[in-house]
Length: 443
Image (cartoon, rainbow, N blue to C red; front, side, top):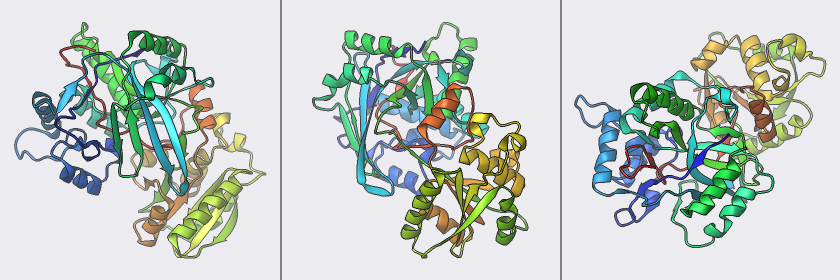
């Protein structure tokens, strides 16, 4: 059973911070070095100083204890204040889809606490594999601050929009918080503290399965921390919850972007050799590029979409306008080649990329992928092409987005997709709400 709870969110005090867009940030794992520098410049109270802090002390303190002290200072100075009543927080994001400037969408959800559950309980489901490094980093920050500084992004099924209907009238008035981010996405939040409405939302959510869209590392970190706290202080229940945004998976505002793969540092790599070897599994179609990054990106998107409707398809770019489409050959018996891969995953283009192209054609094994020895990731096609053109990568694999139906079917069946199989857009802003476990008022 999914257990949903209201909480007294810690949030920016409008009497001190009048312009939210100067202090809120993208999630920590989406913040580049230039973005972090810009965030630091924008305000002394920018949230990046908590979630991705620079080491500025020059002393014995590490960045995690510095973040904890900064958090404590902001609370003492009333930069951050706590809600007086437990509430849940309806949250909308109005945005333009990257690469489709004419398409404007609205994604609806709400922020609340979720009781942590092991995956084995069948309540919360993952869809991607995780890496150990990010979990170590987030664990140190969580132990130091005893706060959820970012939200887990959870999906649930609600084809009748019953939860949204319960909260609809409470999202028609003046917003509680609103900010526009650097991608021109408008983030709007309201607060609902009426115990009757909160109870109805919790009751409606109870029988639903929850799917992690974003935040696998943070969810698993929170789960590990709750077990650590249980061993240290069994009576402390506050670590048994995680702050999350809940979004219906049937929403028209749900957008998944592809995450492209770039290969680098392979000894003896040959484009011609690759093109020859890959034909054992794929039909190869050459495409003519213009040399204009924007035009070529659009051509690639359209070509992938067209071919992907018929067969699993990947685009491979080798620089110097060399682009090919790889469509799975119809005579290939995947049940014989991919004997260890579940049937529901065998025709997923990302699985075929990892299992057939990277491992069998390019000899990049799973351990190397996990350690990102020869592989890194990029969201946009133009940037991927430029990395190859500039010599920072030897080739790029450009992907179609993973359909939400595929994500859900496999996750609920217990099947885990390759890391970075999805990129849900837009991201949830950091800094709108904080779950502070040491709040004197409690949850």
